Each structure stands twice: as structure tokens, then as C-alpha cells.
Image (cartoon, rainbow, N blue to C red):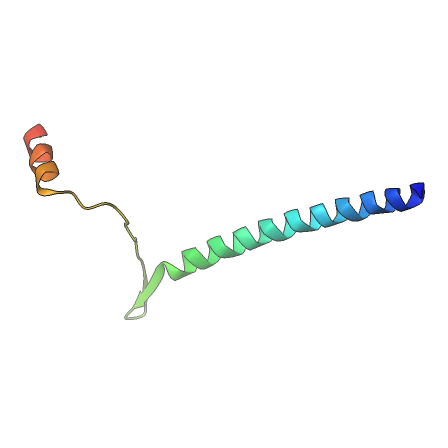
Length: 69
């Protein structure tokens, strides 16, 4: 019974290492694809595209911002 428990511990550790390695590889792959998707080719030249996601200002916020300047 004791040897079974020792083997289960080794199997668990191997699975934990495998999960860690595969998740790190997946994260690197996603980052690489995101960088590649940010490149656009126009007339044979590559140009970086920046996507900005932000909340739009209301008219009151714009007026307050201009008054602060």
C-alpha cells in the first residue's frame, strides 16, 4: 500500500509540472499571436496598429477637462 502512495505522489508531481509547462507555453503562444495580429501590411510595408479601448468622456467631463487646462 505504501508503494502505491509513493507512486501516486510521483504521478501527481509529474502532472503538476506538465500543467505548469503547458500553461506557460500557451501564454507565450497567445502573446506571440497578439503581437502578430497587431501588424498590418499596407503596400508591402508593415505598420503597427494600436487598439485603444477606453471609456468615452461625457460633455461635462470634456468641459471640466478643458477648464482645468
